[in-house]
Length: 244
Ligand code: F6R
Image (cartoon, rainbow, N blue to C red):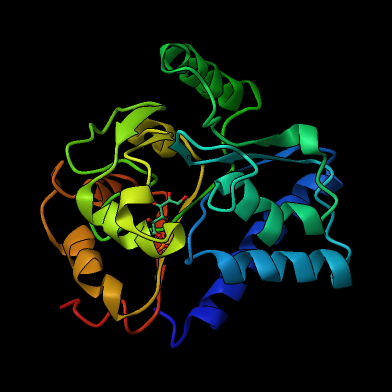
């Protein structure tokens, strides 16, 4: 628990940077699972600063984003492609061939095969070294909404009503928020060697309490993380304020 999100985000960025630079020294790739949204923004800005000022290279970094709205054009302002370019990829030396973000432009019929291939690609790169997570007020991680199975894989899902309400400011109204998304599964996330869930602010206090203190249940998918010994919750005092 950190006094503020900035100090916490800097710690997370430095952990990621350490894994990247250790792997760089040994000539190994680093495979990162990345999240979007408000939560990881300061992590990405610190990673950009480390690239610009401390020479941290992303040339051997492979990324897989957790999710994308469906349908979604990559050049739409609300796409997670646009978000990642704006916050990280446009500012570091990553090879754009190493970036993977679920494709929001596919025909629905093609999505199951695409999702299997996405999973396979993660495994072919040796699995995720670090998975970054935020948490939604429904308890979702990625877009694994209530009802998601602990062994779920990458797939097309329907967004919860609360998730669409929370996203509505970005879309100029809830009616414009896509009803679906493609997300990595809980099972996909669990395969990561290290999982870091972050949450900031009073708005997340209730769901953090449920995720940490309630029994494991599909009603709050983040409770599945209690089953893993590779997880850290990095939160600020406001998000921690309801913990007993
Ligand atoms: C985003 C994602 C979501 C968000 C969550 C929290 O890629 O997978 O699970 O992490 O909805 O969103 P923010 O950070 O905007 O509160």
